[in-house]
Each structure stands twice: as structure tokens, then as C-alpha cells.
Amino acid sequence: MASDKDYSSMNRPLSPRLSIYRWHAPMLASLAHRASGITLVLFIPVYLWLLHAMTGTPEDFAAARAWLHLPPGRIVLWLVGASLIYHFFNGIRFLCLDAGWGESREAMRLTARVAIGVGVAAAIVLGVALW
Image (cartoon, rainbow, N blue to C red):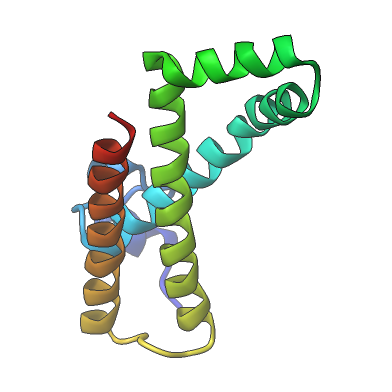
């Protein structure tokens, strides 16, 4: 076991921050997974409002439909749709890692790149479809 003196001589912080890490695909995939999860959770109130409007009065339905056709509504749909697709595919990646599949450094980098690529491709396709 190393003493405190040995650790301090390596100039490593006890609690590393994102600013000192070298960015790799698995790290980016993990951070993007968290961000997409936060996006999906933050969308829940908007989703509930849309659901209420779609099942409410004809005036509520028309208001929700109009909002979805405006740029802010389309941006929200694009952001949530891209987040959902990325979160789904990267979640499958994490489930495979939890099961012990693809734990090598090369496999983790490859699967992270694939998940990021699928997310970017989905964002582009969804953006084209919405505009």
C-alpha cells in the first residue's frame, strides 16, 4: 500500500475533473448518455402537457398542434427524439458491458463510436424529417 507521500509525488488530484482528462469515445459516450437521460427527464412535463392537450378540448388540441409546428416545438421534438434514440442504443451498449460483453479497451472504444455515430445519424435524419 502506498503512503500519502507517494500519491502526492505523482501530482494527481484526489478528485479528478473533466478538465484534466483526455477525451476518449467511451468517456464522451458516457457523458452524452447522462445528458440524454437528463433531457428525457426534463421533457416529461412537456410530454404531459402535450398528452393533456391531445386528449382535451379541440381548442387545446389546436394549440398543441400549432406549437409543435413552430420552430421551438420542432427543436424540442428534434432534441428529445435524438436523445431518445441515442439513449436507447447507448443503453443497450451499457447493458452488454454489464453482462461482460465487449469489455476490452478496443471493444469499448468501437461500441462507443458506433453509439455516437448512430446518435448523430439519427439526429440528422430526424432533423431532415422535422424541417
